[in-house]
Image (cartoon, rainbow, N blue to C red; front, side):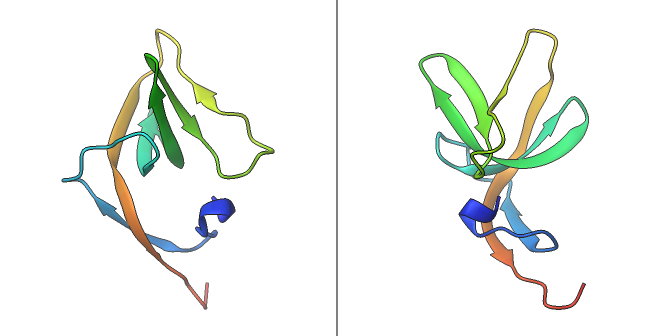
Length: 81
């Protein structure tokens, strides 16, 4: 998510009280795996988009399980890993 200024090792602040909307960066669980992506919701389609054009959008199929855990509201950069 470098395009959204979220880098490997950053700590994210996630607000579970915010209702996820189109364009939000979300912490999602897809088939029991966590990911951070931008939510695309429109025209009856839900996708998760990376902020790197090298990665295609994540599209969901009938048997996929998606749970949006919360909306990312901030990030704290780590200087020592």
